[in-house]
Length: 437
View 1 (cartoon, rainbow, N blue to C red):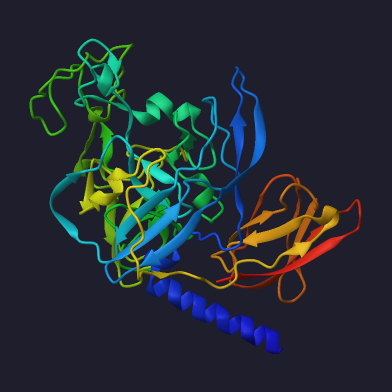
View 2 (view 1 turned 180 degrees about the vertical axis):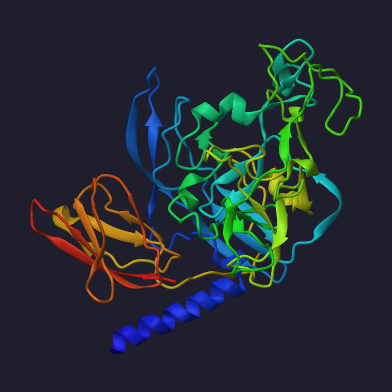
């Protein structure tokens, strides 16, 4: 009874902190040394993959803050990355990002860069912009060095969507910088669609990014939940002589044809109020969310009625707020910012209790406490069955798993649970207490 009271008190305290400071507490902080892992693409068609347990840290390594900013240091890696179709793998990047604690609406519109990163997922994986880094040169699509002029920018969903993994809508580029272009399925797909989507990241202007579901009434947390609908649609054009909004293009693009169909370029899309979307031209709205009960401006991941990622995916053509320009110096293998001396850093509640199971492997569950989504890591092997019991001793989750990979568990109700991992070959077990806040 005493132990239950202590855990309950911790749960209440932790939940209060998370609501009060979501920009600080929403990052998946690595407090137990867990390592990144990926499906390395060896090439070929169809490709072959090796599952690789990396030596680099997964998720956010440090989260620190001052009175004005929050700093997130990470390697741009997480667990179970892949399977992407382009050959190669992810490589640690040594990033530090900075987010304003008191974000404000931009006084003039700031373009959301089509190249490079525009925000960060809660697991430390960068969100990249809308283009694949190629644009019309006058004769062909090319990168800037080869003559691409950055006016008609090749849209990444059509050009690269098929190569992205189904974990985070992501892949590594040539230098191994893993990044998400479309939708971070893993961060929201296990939450029921009649619940508000979880917070999946932050844009560089400091405003949160949520999964695709929000309240029907943006000011009423008791209203029904619905899919957020983008106001962007393909333009009705046969020539590329004008830009979205009707202004004459400073460079004509190729005609709309079989080689360059509508949707080839970001500029083939436009936002229209008449489309009836629930989101504005920035791909967000001012609303109440679970983490911001008093309201905030928030972006939403967009998908169509079939569940497919939909343009503009994360952020519209412009930021709603004023982005921190210091983040744009982060590039592959680059570290443009540093955490200032005197900043306060998160230490967190313990996020796991380790137990020795068959083979002497270290077993961990993270994050713990969580909003209901846990990752179970066996670090190679040592378990092949998982059972989760509620406080009444009733099994609420059972799964047969592969011990050489990380395993995701979702629990939908707040409470304290007992997780039992079994090695049915040796008869050894490991028990963990997990908390859903």
